[in-house]
Image (cartoon, rainbow, N blue to C red; front, side):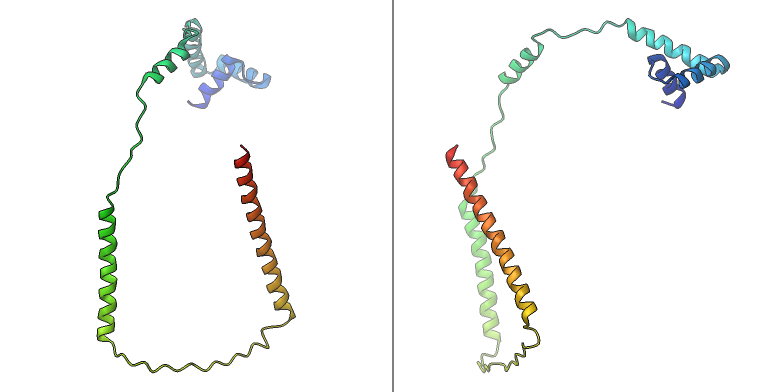
Length: 163
């Protein structure tokens, strides 16, 4: 719809303000295009008003719902998975991982010369009262969150048992 038709439909339906009504009336009187479109829309409006819409019977909804209830309800699809397939796939992967492990052991040099690495822990510059307080604050917040979730689960399970 263009703006001319929208304006004229608003004018015909009475949905425009007084200023718009005066403006459209002057356009209808002056502009031939407005006048011809206005006449066409008036014809359509009058035809629509003449149509007598049929209403469904009072029991229409009940009749439709009765027919819907008579329809067969779809059966839930239940699939049975064969456990042999799952076991064979798991066995294949287990056998593959075992063979890769055995191959890695067979091709590697098996010398166990293990020495503990020397580590120098200089933590004095990192551990100060601020970091300890921050650590404790985070621990307390996490503890409170855990306690809250635990109590909520307990409350929900108690409500379910009561229902």
